[in-house]
Length: 635
Image 1 (cartoon, rainbow, N blue to C red):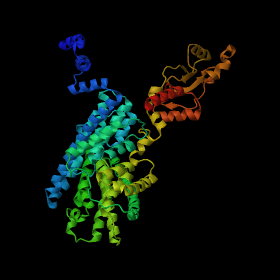
Image 2: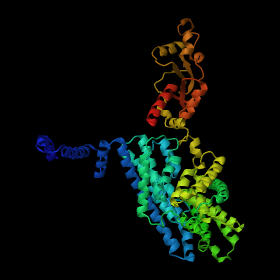
Image 3: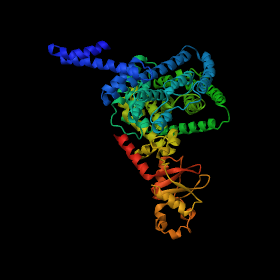
Image 4: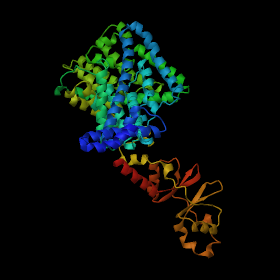
């Protein structure tokens, strides 16, 4: 370092003699970097890795937009790699079970593995992650709205571990939601490490989830649609380039590493024919109704497990046993089920039936409908049991599986009715988008996901018809996704109402003014005047000996008698105090506080915590903080 310092002092003297300005600038930049590295390591509390020093130096020397693009690349590659690792692990476990053994041998796996998967996942959550099992997309939305987009570092790997155990051993759920949570945790913690603000942290959180979805399906546009439709609802951004580069990086990592069998891809399909639109309209209606059935069953199963008076481990055992029974009777319910959908897309239903007990029955056309119908109806139960019984997974894969099965079911019904030229493959592919759209309330994500996965851009018209019809039917029953409805009603996640979202970022404790005057309800009017003479506020709280709020005194109300000393002996605090028009509870959210201000048309309201007085909140403090957030949020 001394040599560098000496060089830096000597270089200007050599420059006129032939040392070019560009070479001098480059050497100077290297010197600045080494000086930054030395100072950082000397002054930092913790020793950091070399690559972190490089990134911190880039953080200080690159423009804000350039560093965000670099961050998008790094987060995208990391989240994509995490998704690839999870997909590969689960894919090879399923490959060993379903491809290396005959059905009679597989029965042992169907009996044992689903039970083990849910029980082991529950044990991991209880004893390794100390019961912290908040999972799924709602968990990400909660962190964005309530925790400044700060996701626990544990989620960078915990979701991978839990979902790999659950789904790898046969849990009837999807890997995409855990991958999205993992990616969001990677993006959030990257932003936290390099001290990015809330907006940039939220953007990189969404970028990580985008990359995870893009890697899971090799569908970068679908990953971006997922971020826009679900994660960034109610969030305003002007710079989406980091999302784009993260999606591309995640997709590239998936395409480079994963083989064709592990990728969610469908290469065979029928050309689109406008004469087939009636098929797609019927399919769209069926998908919408099935999506509602899927949601209702999920809520019912969740309710049953939540109110089941058993320990978490006992619930996991019950769920595992139920799931094992379903998998033995209907092996397509084992795991994600993508391999079954790929077989259905080729029209080879016999290959699916051949790996179940139904192969021992005489084969009839109506028999196919019975088999597919049971799979469709029971998939909702199998997925809900897996997730709410103690496993870890999401609804991406189950909705796609159910949609593909439902599409094939309707295609077979049409064929048996004697209708010619039924586009069976297209019905399977488009049905996946339909049910996914209705279950996740994400029609654009569903459309682009299936279009990219099947290279079926010529199917955009049927994809849009089916997805939109299904989405509208689902919204007819519930305006907000049922998975998010409770959190939305409690004000814990963002909605599409931008002003309400800003209010959610305000926290009641931060708005309370504790520096206020209070007086005993038994005090005299003379004592009140003495308190007013040294005060600065236009309101005083009246409390009893237990510090419980009894009323308030407004200076405007007593001003007419303040200077009439003849009335001092006749008056006291009880006679001049008034009941406040409304009382704010310390647990109220800011939306409720604003509502109380609007209804009472007042400027200051008292705050109590378990009836004990704690301070006042003024409308001006709420408005000032709101304006600050609006400036930061929209800047």
